[in-house]
Amino acid sequence: MTGALEGKAVVVTGAGQGLGAAYATLAAAEGAAVVVNDVDVELASAMAGRIGSAGGRALAVAGTVATWEGAGAIVGACVEAFGRIDGLVNNAGIFRLAHPAEQDPDDFRRVLEVNLLGTAYCGLHAIRAMLAQGGGAIVNVTSGAHAGSAAMGAYGASKGGVASLTYCWAADLAGTGVRVNAVSPNAHTRMADAFEAYLGTAAQGQNLHKPPEQNAPAVIYLLSDASAALHGQIVRIDGDELSMIAHPTVLGEGARDASWSVGGVAAAFEAGAVGPLMPVGLHRSRHEADLGG
Image (cartoon, rainbow, N blue to C red; front, side, top):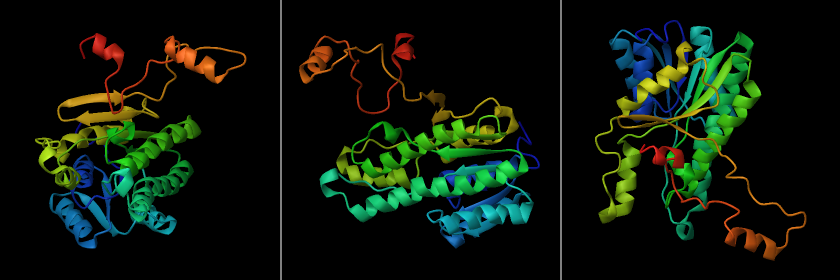
């Protein structure tokens, strides 16, 4: 799909290195003018320079996504430089690991500020600009950690919030020409290195042989007009596998009682009328398992 983003202007947050750099690089190669955002001005400038040297168009915009004003400046720079904003990749994020008994409250708050509020602030500014111009595409970045992963309370909560934000915005924006989807990427990045360092001898080689670039085509697809039918979806990339993450759903038919009591609730669970109980973590659906998927 050479030229999938031809003529479009796209913002990629946290694009100085890692996954964000891979998204920005491919977006430019597919014809987009790209705002390369990062809190590190040197990383942002170097990345924009590499895109320019390869024949693409890029503007480095340093700054944080974690404030309303910072997010507005990033989105505004795209509109000022390129006349519009057709795409936003909410990639900027930070990562902290801790057991709940040892969780630093300031670390917890900071993860939510960058990962969740940063996504929300950039998205809100972009949505307003996109509605005014008649369309656009937002790609949020969530994680399988939101389904449950040890030592990832802050990170998982932030990414669960991003998933919920994606569903809610999709409901709000249906039929407007502004689409909102999300990706759940996997790659060996600084985050994987931090996870391995935290686990020590228990580390299994987090996402080895999964380069950031392997995730970029799905993101570019979601930014492009080719994905016009996708709205409110979460696409998962895990090495050579492309799949979807299901929306939250109510399991089974449930049990009914006009006047629930504690004993009645206990009896319903004991009888298997409620459930089945779900394992913690990201798992394949029972349907896929039945099919050998």
